[in-house]
Image: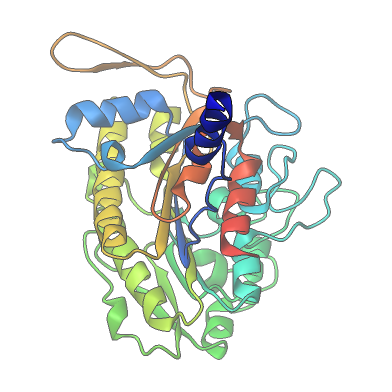
Length: 357
């Protein structure tokens, strides 16, 4: 009799007695990518940033494996495609599988479901990482073709450099700026890299193309500070237009470039800029219970480590990408899905499942 009572008690109160509750579902997802941002890059920023840092406040931490289909050391094209499309592909590929066939991205799926979409970057808008969310080419260097595909995709809000690939084209002479206008885009130019574009003043029936440079935006060390402000403005612009939620990708692009250059000062300022953006985005997400925030990298760059006594001194191992795993931080509804160690393609699958796409 006693054993029967104990069995009943165990069945009622054991953690194994009932299935775990289904994860909360977000309405919106914001994916922040620090290009080339490994643990050492993050550690550098943690030492330099006044606590608490935004990453220290994130509720969930996991790890993702970054290798491509062909190399342990991936590139931003293959890594971006894994994150955006959920497939491993060959280095330099954008939005295609290993057989070069196009694969639909999370941004395109969200668009097809009626969600609003956008991205904000500190590279050109046709660079490998942003391109992997809307374009499908076998070579990441096909900038003019990628620009044409951006026009066709219909992203609701995009911010970054690279206007020349729309307005001054060698391949066909087309004026893609005029094509954007015909598709109801309001064309903006951020003349001051420290400024804001006031996207809230754009009527909601218009899409937004905000160019921050003709080619690549300048470095943070040269005065570029638009990323935190434009990230928040893009969130507001998408929220204003979204009836069914939104998907937004934000990239701190030049963390990778500074690591490739083995330039500690440049890297420190890019990471501080990235942390300032993360702080603003996290604060806004915490005010909204419907948004999942994910922060990760596409890969690590330069096999970097830190040394020193009172202040960190960077030691770069080389000037190329590494095969190290990179962290994944998550906060908001569904964040618990990002615990553990997994392939980078799983980030796509988890986002897709949480949005019900």
